[in-house]
Length: 120
Image 1 (cartoon, rainbow, N blue to C red):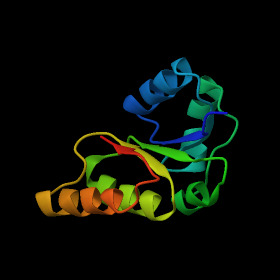
Image 2: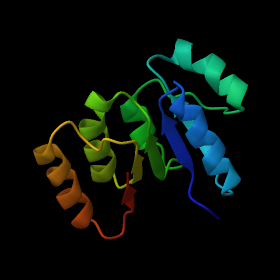
Image 3: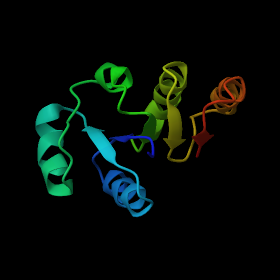
Image 4: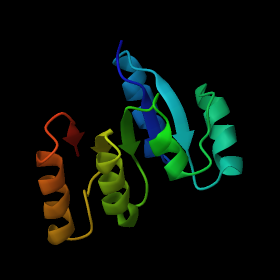
């Protein structure tokens, strides 16, 4: 069974990821937006049952084995780092981070966790 995917971000690109994931045969298990109240209408529109109330809740969800990060650029580093540390596979929209040093730190972290997949 393919791993479950959680998408972070409800703007333009988030729904694009939802569609792409589904076309590949994966299940979107949840959606996280800037607030549950703002995410719920988008989740309903996309047919996603679960809306997370926080990133910590998403990372604690064993059904969410892959995290797609489609948030503003300034959030990518911390979110990708935290997802990798939580044992999740990560797909992050570009740019990976806001600086070369942050990007290098994420690349090194991902390389140290060969059982996980990380992609930009």
